[in-house]
Length: 86
Image (cartoon, rainbow, N blue to C red; front, side):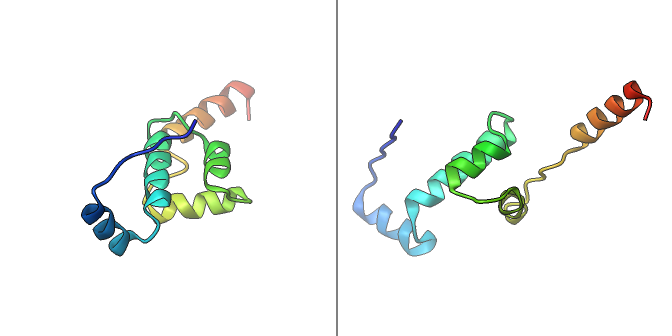
């Protein structure tokens, strides 16, 4: 799917002056929100942003103060360990 947005030239110029590549910035914000909402996973982020490794994904998430391992993940891992008797 291709998504197009129309911005008035003056607004586009201001955004570009501040952010550089506006298209990339919009894509990154979409990815971050999708990850926060648990719609997208690490592999999705790799595909969408063209990262080679999961470490690049982790760096990207850290740069944007988005935890890639949450308290909920820890709780799930604890429950799994207990269930397996580890």
